[in-house]
Length: 241
Image (cartoon, rainbow, N blue to C red; front, side, top):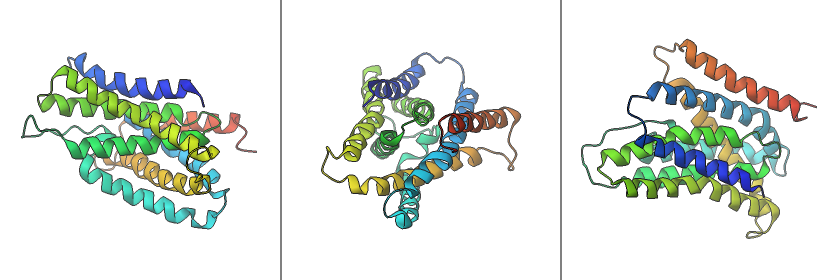
């Protein structure tokens, strides 16, 4: 199990959240571009790598059911997270109230997103997921700051969020190798659920911020760049043969 993946996952999310203390001007446009890039990259990786791998395993006829479950699960999670995983920042009228729904659903989301890394032999997913967590962590830190949390509290909850994806990676790695629970036979079904989550997250990022279904030139460049890098990785990894 590669330690460097755990470190990248943790520190991208952690420092992405900590940047709230450094930002003096509005960086929402930069966050949107990072989101667009990571959304396009995650979508391409899901289509090129995760879906074919999931259908190559046992019980592949049922994988579609688990993809639908994952898709619906993400819709449910967003009822509590208020879209923070997309980098959304909502102002809350009630201050000094801890946003439990946001924190719990965001942590569960990050945990599930770390799971496919156990099957990511070509390191295609690690950077997309890490980038995706930067705006999410920034949005979480913004909400905590709006709710009058002290710096120490914000750092503490950011650390909890940042550890979730590495934890998901560690658990799924143990499941896939059979060292945790002897439930490796369910690994492909679990990946189906994660694929459904990725499909929902990536398509929502790509389409929801478009005004009148028109995409800005900057966003289009970010999207095409994300897809291009995924395609380069696909053809250089030998998956295309």
